[in-house]
Image (cartoon, rainbow, N blue to C red; front, side):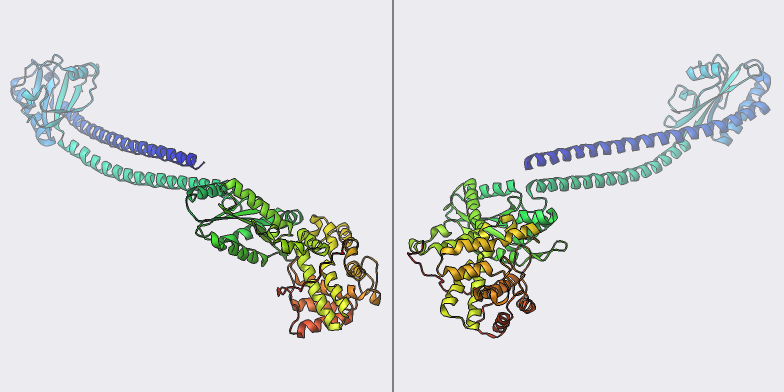
Length: 617
């Protein structure tokens, strides 16, 4: 694609140069033609003015000084001839700047001239003279003094002359004689030259301005075409929404990097990143909400990774990061930082709560996990699937997941551990929330002084209180928005399903009571059995307080976490309606004053809460 676009812009550049060259030739041709036309028009105008002036003089001479019988060789005396020729010299030549005058008879004989000795000579009628006798009209022209009459004029041969013919017309229309006048053409030619220079100067300046303007236009056009071509080339390589490299360019970049580093000893890192619950965000709040999440993730990725890494949008909600050998060592740390930064995001769409954004990532390395781009991408996709299967907001590295656990660790897993892992596989939030509820339950149990057996059972029940969510459809469990009435009715059933699931765990009776009744309310409006007050088992009332506090202080798919103080305030508001007021008072006071109070996100691990028993079936 890039080669085609580059060749296209080169063709356009050549075409623009041709058009620019043709335009300059047209400008030059037009300027030359304009100068020639103006010069010719000025010359004709000057000649016309000269003819008009000389014709008026000639007419006045004929009317006042030329007798009617003077237009023949025999009708005038020698004295009259001398007088007429003197008048020609005085009136025409000497006073008017005319250089030479002859009066011709129809046969070409000179009747009169300002030059002595020409009378009676037959110079033979030329074409212009014959035309003057025949039509009475001959256009004036500029000739050199070396014309056929030069020998009879006595004029210097280098002079330029204006040649004019003026027929003498009788009343009957006949032409008995024709005046031939030669005038110095120097003033006319000087006027033409001066005018030509002025016009040429104006035309040259205009042509230069026009050429510069054309150059600026063509240069701007060329630059715009270049920018457009670059934009098209960039658009063919980048995702239109996020501005990151698109799928094809990213994969091609990975393949090229692997090829270039094949002989090196370094390691290339590949991270496939997926936005959790993206489809549900789109379905609940529309594609604009999904686009906003994509833009935010892309922005954070650009800030986290430098230009040496390849960043691309790999799929509708997936991104690919390729770290070259000299940067791959820090890929996992960078992905963890990226995940933490994205987890701090909160987006709000319309009247929704502040919604969290989380991502899952699968990481693999070349050449350990493969040498070809397709092989590595397949491994990264499998590892990403494992991360998403754990509920999202997780990172998995090829060959470093649960499958890599040692045999001693795997042998310690019994039925209870299997249930906990099942919750983790279903929904990452549910497992973390359950661990928090267990911690809060233990803390509250210590505050109110329960017996050791109940305390131990509270730990187990806290971990398993939401195990029934295994049966809730993903679209409902992870929905990033309020549930419908029907969806909420489905969610309520998780306590009944959980009750059935935990029936074989140690202390099953108390555990089942905690699992089934932790959503009962002090005022009797809870579910499933509508128990109230002291009729709710103590273990369920303790778990209810921990469950409420954890729910409010943990980021959910449909809202961000509350602060601890706001959550405690809401617990106090729920005392006597939703929760046991005595337990709420003890819990709030303990969180606010106890040095070892379990705070949200403090990361303290639970003690081992079960002992594998071979008798458990």
